[in-house]
Structures are given as structure tokens and as C-alpha cells.
Length: 441
Image (tube, rainbow, N blue to C red; front, top):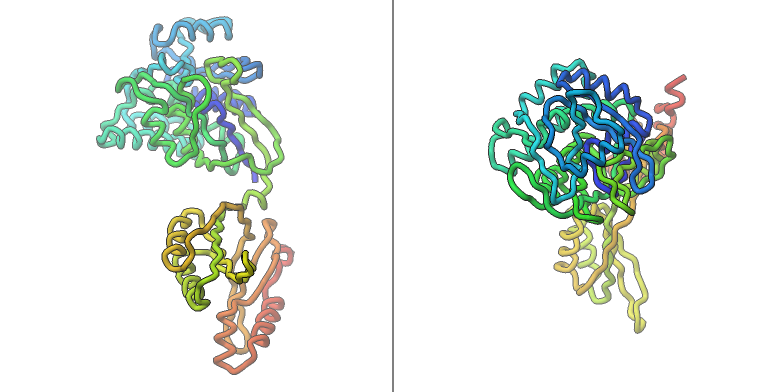
């Protein structure tokens, strides 16, 4: 499985992702042609820059749409010195919102556009259907976030910050660049959202901006470094567009890497987004979190513990098991262990405290890996039996076993030993179900 991993130690914005894509191997022409296809009077420029002593790619949207004087003057001089010129006459190098210090950042791009107008621009462009669908979804998510924040219908939302040409180009080009990488799944580190305040059309607001916070949902967030906005609304929408999952770097063989630069160079803390692309270890990637709850009880009736085990399973626990333990002062006790989804932990914990005599317990989160499973039916001489089949990621069968309840029912119905029914089911399966390799012959 081809995986893209975004290391957001300095946040994420549209221009940072474009730079990381180019640096990771996406042809700049792919983005340039996408920009031209939008027909919005803009073009892209790329250049090599240094952030914290590390080389990176900076991608800028160059547009005729906005006049001079809309950006922080000191920052504009920094950008000009990096690129050596201001580009062709009549164009403006538009630096992105991520580049500004928190106290100077102004989300005041123009013109304002409705969601339907932006979607129409995307839909009419001669672009790949997947690119248009992804980009449209990003703007739909942005519109829904703004509508919810201001409690208005989505079509009454006018995009002060995200409707400008530069952000349309950012999002559509990001969709095109990500498609060019042919990544199967996207993953990201926890997000450094920054701190401070940001000036926008609705006044001075805390970082992260309300739209950014709404878009990020339950993504893991933290704040570090100088006060500035590090995750922009555009960056948050792109994470949602890519259906990113969050967590540490998984086991993978890195084939390419890219560094995308933000506008500011923050000393000692590179203002960069790092992208790693490669093949993930599918077995490791299939791991999922599991909650383990344990308590030791030495004063409960065994029948009570059997009843509580039934309640725990009915409440959604994956498994419950009991083991005898030797406690202090020679007491014999029973350790009850419950395995479940992490989100069920509070309910199962309360159930244990309410239904047993324990006055304390412990829990932890671990990783669980399970092979893919499926069921097939086989016809024995006594009736049908379901076979549980476990497969390796390659598709080969790792294990096959008859379902106990099916075999038990046939054993009772026909007065046949249970072991005989189970053996017959295995024999029929082996004779009638070919392996994946045999199917391909």
C-alpha cells in the first residue's frame, strides 16, 4: 500500500503542501497546467528557499486579481529578496495566510465568492474527475464550517478568506498533485496549530481560527513555538479532503520525501511541512487500538463473576476472561480482564464498578492486529456449516475453522459426536474450496 505521511510539526497551509508535493517528485507542470485549466487569471511560481537551515520548495500563486498593499510590508520585502524579483508586470506575488505573524495576519482577500460560484469554476475546468471531486469536497467542507459558525444557510456564506483566487488554486492544485503521487492512504502527525490571534473579516480571533477548529474536528492538536497561525483554514480543509488519519509514523519504506516552506523563516524552528511517500507495511498498518481493563477480586461469588462477564459481552466487549491469581497474605483471587474498543472504556469501567465488589481497577491502551476474516458455507452430510477463514494480506489462507455453534447444533440434532461434525466440515472445505493460487491457474 502506497502511503503519504504528513509531518505537521509547523502546521500546514495550502502553499506548504504544494511545495512539499513538488519537492517529493510531483512535476511542477502538473500544478502549472492545473492552474491554467482553472482560467482564473493566475499562475504558479516555484523557488528554492531555506527554512531553519533546511532547503525547501516555496510555491506562490501569482495573480492580477488583487492590488498592491494588501500584505505585511516587512514580509513582502523578505519574499522579494528570496525570489530576486516581483515577477511579470501586472502580477502580484500573493503570499499565503500561513506566512503572517499572528498579530499581523489579515484574512481579507477579495473578491468574495459564494460556494456555488467556486464549485462552478471547478466543475467547468477541464480536469480529472477525481481532482474536481476532491477539490469540490474541500470547499463544501469549508462552506459547511462557515455556515455552522455563523448560523446561516450555506449559500449565504461568502468566502472572505478562502474564496480568493489564490486559495482556489491552492486547493485544486493540491488535489491534482496528490492524485499524481498515486497515494492509497494519507496519514499525519498531531498538528501544531500555533497560538496568538488572527485578524480577519469578523474581527480579531484566537488561533486556531473558528473555521480551522471546526474543520479539524477530533484531530490531535498542540501549540508550540512563536505566536503565529500554523494551521490555516485551507490547510485544515486539505486534511479533510484527503481523509487523513492521525498517528505516529507507521512502518514504511520511504521512496521520496519533500519539504514545503511557509512564508516566514522562524529561527531555530523550521517553518516547514515534511511529506514522506512510500510503501507501508500492511500488516503493521492493520493494527488498531484496543482497551484492556483489569481488576482482581477476592470476595465475589463465582456465579456473580460469570453473570458480570455476560453483561460485559452484551455491552460490547470483544472478550472477557478470568484467571486465578495468588494475592498478598495468601488470598486467592480472580483477575478479570476485559478487551474492548477504546471508546467503550468508560461504560465498561462503570459496569465493573457497579456490578462487582471491586473498589478499583486499571486500564491501558494497546495495539491489536487481526487478519482479514470471512465466512463460507460447506455442505456436510448432516447440514450446512459456516467456516471462518482468516487470510494473510497476500490473500492466502492463514487458517480455517468450523463455527462451533453450527457444529454443536448438528451434533445435537443428529446425535453425532461433535468432533466428528467438525472433522467432516474441515474435510469438505479442503475438497471444495480452492486456495487463491489454485483459482488463478
